[in-house]
Length: 249
Image (cartoon, rainbow, N blue to C red; front, top):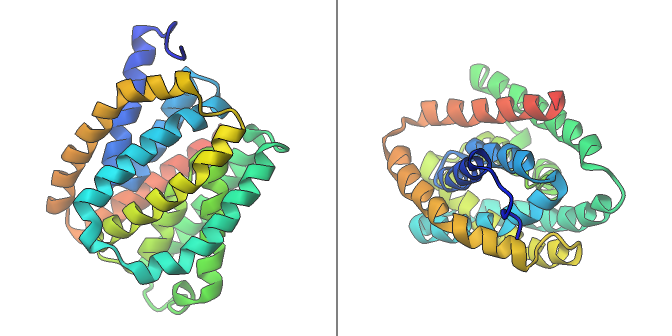
C-alpha cells in the first residue's frame, strides 16, 4: 500500500493535493500544480504521476458534469490532435529522460509564455493574430501533450493558450474540463504500461477522491464571483509561480 507508512503530515499534504485538484478543475487551473509539488514530496516524483492521474480524471468528470455546457468545441478541436501526438512523444521520452532534467524546461517554457501574455494584456495590439493561427495551436497542443504525460503539468500551458484566445472565464473552465478529460483518459494505458498505475495506487486514490469533489464544490462557487480580469491575473500568477518552482527545483 502506497500510504501504509505515511506520517500525519504526509497524509495532510496528500489530502490538500486532492482538494487542489478539485479547485483547479473548477476554474483555477494553476492551483493544480500545487498537487504535483505536494505529491512529489510524499512519494517519488515518477510514481506520483501515476497516482495523481486517476484523481485528475475524477476531477475532470465532476468538472464536465458541472461546466459541460460552456465548452468551446472549436478550440478543443484545434489543440486536441497535437496534444495526443505530444502524449505519445512524452511516453517515449519518459523512458529516456529523467524528470529532473525535463522539469526546468517546462518551467522556462511556461514562464516565457506567461510573460508574453502579460505583455499582450498591457499592449493589446501586440501579437494579436498569433493565438488564432494553426501553428500556435499545434505548438501549445503539442507542448500540453508532452508535459501532461511526463509531469501532469499541462495546466499552465493550456492556461496560457485559453487566455491568449480570449475565452471568457466560464468558457475557459468548460473547454478545459472536456479537453483534460479526453487527454487524461488517453494517457491511462501509457501510464499503466509504465507501471505507474496499479492496485495500490488506485486504493490510495479512492481514499482521496472525496476531497477532489470538495474542491470542485468550493471552486464552483468561487468562479461565479471572481471578476474576469482578476480571474485572468490569478491564473497567470499561478502559472508563473509554478514555472519558477520547476526552474529552481
